[in-house]
Image (cartoon, rainbow over all chains, first blue to last red; front, side, top):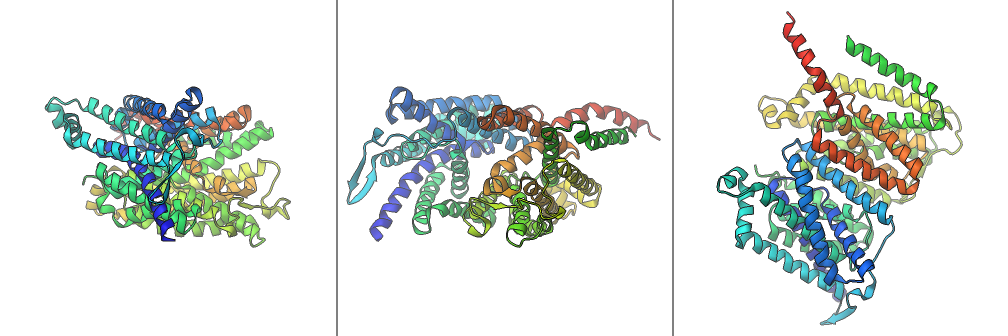
Length: 287
Length: 323
């Protein structure tokens, strides 16, 4: 009994690591520009489809699909920044919400139109099979996703805290005008942040594509997961997103196992609402 | 005076439309425009005037739709009885959700409303009493006129027109009342409004409850026209998004903004659906997405604000010369 529980927890941690990876992208742009990307989950969905296309067209596995998805989505992120975000950032709240929401619809239904609403999935043999570690049965694809996601999330944290690029980005987050006076271009830094954030979703999408169902509307659920993760972990904090992502992965797996698979999303959403309602002081922006 | 002339022209067009363009498709289209205009106008009270961008209004829409179908399917009553029932449930729910959620600012409010709507959809999908994933059906063969089940869209058209007029009158009355002034102050700066003694929390909550009540009426009417409700058509997030987009496209915070938005987007969706078939649904939302991205980027005040800006200098100089 408890052995199954350990199995469930490990599975949750591995999935949670991927949640942490794409949520750290959301927390980065949120903390830096105080804008919420409602299309964030759809970026992940796009990453999944890139990986799927790479497989069907070229027969490539995650070794080819993951870097390509990262690259494609990073490009999408930079383009979206210059074409849309830069202007709506200065606009009213309604414009910010509408802009990224419209983007979400645009991405979701372009994919829907092109690929249809069918559930797609990668073939099992693309990443190894299942192997046993200390008696636990772990799928190779999940292990790969979890380990890569944790490493990249930590790498992102190091990038922000230990490099000059990271310092420049944090400077822009702190005060864009002051940063500009120091010779840092806020525009470039924010575009890079969008590139990194979207690249992280591309990688995350390519990683979970190996074992997750691939469907145009998957971004809706994943987007809410990212909101929950960022709200729990504190906005702008990559380590916070990592801890919160792992936590949510475990909570989701446990509630799926203990209460029933259909209720696992309800548990996560209710948790999110309770957190928003009863601990709003930590969430009300920079005031 | 010109405003009165405009109003009578719009009213005349609205009354004559289904008689002049009388094919079933055109009448149905007209009814749907009015229906979505009701929902979008209801959203406008809290999203436009109060500036609280709710993305979860489908919860209240669903209250009305499920109450209308439930009163028939569960109690054998006319779906009409569902309207007051739906209003009561929606207002109660709005109070419960609103008190903690309206404290959240900006994006957090929007995200919380999405989470509420999705939670509700998942709960209803798993509740057998509410028909689970299949939903509830209305009367297939009407027993009498009070079942409001008609083959033609014409009766629906005039019913919806009447409800829309009531909705717009309530909105108009509200904007000119004390509450409207409070809401405008809160939208500009909540902190400033509070410091001047405007009861911000209470006013926002009242606006939210009023908006919820009217949205639930729209949901009930929708369910009556289509004769059924399921979690996707009654509680799907896309309904919320459509309502919001129509109001924003026309002009959020403007009385006729939602009507203009509905009059553009509903025909767009219906025509592309009938031309392109099932796959067209995808393309419609691609177009929806593109339109709101463009609106958000270039004209965040909505289409009507474009028109208003051009008209404004005249009234300004007129006011300046007045004694």
